[in-house]
Image (cartoon, rainbow, N blue to C red; front, side, top):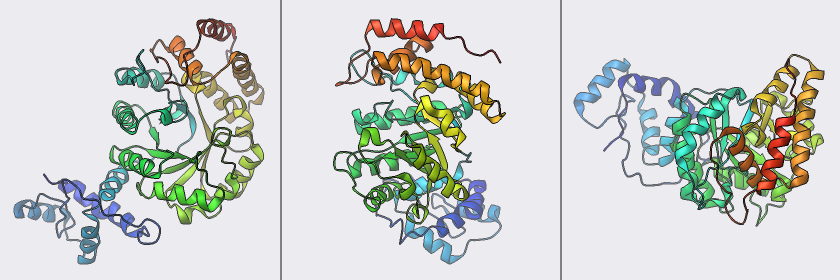
Length: 400
């Protein structure tokens, strides 16, 4: 079985994708690593892809109008046996939108016995898409999603289901592919590219930690190189990783090392570091999404593009209203929303708040069974659920 492109796709390939492929510095930044494809791609002399029949090749040649150069064909043949080529082709064909606004850090639904529950993902997608979460963007297999407590196969299954169910409903599905093992992270990056993810994000490895900028960039580059046409984001969360390399330092020259680098999920309270990042890298059009939900308004004030957080699963509408008030220069209204979100989070944090409690609140608010967390985490107590629900129900949100 060979991959076949229609005449129209073949023309698009020649006009749009080929120049991109030729522009990438493959030998210096993204050295290709030969991987045997089970169904190799055959590329015809006319810059089309076919099953090899002369009749089909002639049809494609006629539709394209003229053949690509033999230099182009030589370049493509060198890549045709590499799996990364297919991910470049697929990702480059998809239209892109800038990542901004609210990003829901998705929860991984589980059955009562602790297995991933794919059957409710479609319901989850519909809930978020209808809940006015700005831009309908989701991150999968991150901290809230217990990604590092899942097997590689489970993470792949979840990613596939989110991409499948999110088609035509979600603007972006970003897959977190970070892992303690570099080969595992690379495998997840290749998989995310192959299934058409909008982007990939990577957390710093946190058992054997990078100790300086160069070590961290080397790790990130090795992962990004496996998905060379997929937007890449660094997930900065030093309270959990213990990796305290300042993002301001990390971003210096990062595009030269990782051409697909698009931005940062900044989950730290060091607003000075975030401000310096935004001040120094505005011209690069990097995306800076803030990950401390209770301090979002402060991050917006210094130029953050939006936010990634667990509370946007069930308070997406309220936080979206805060973003809209801020955009309309109504700081008093924006503060009201931020203070009320903070009031709720302050309350549940005093009770003990983490992934298990987030799952319980989301189940209560949405009616979608999120199930228990995976051990060593334990499910939220009934006392917590009762108190958290009562507190959330008691909050009087602004009406305008």
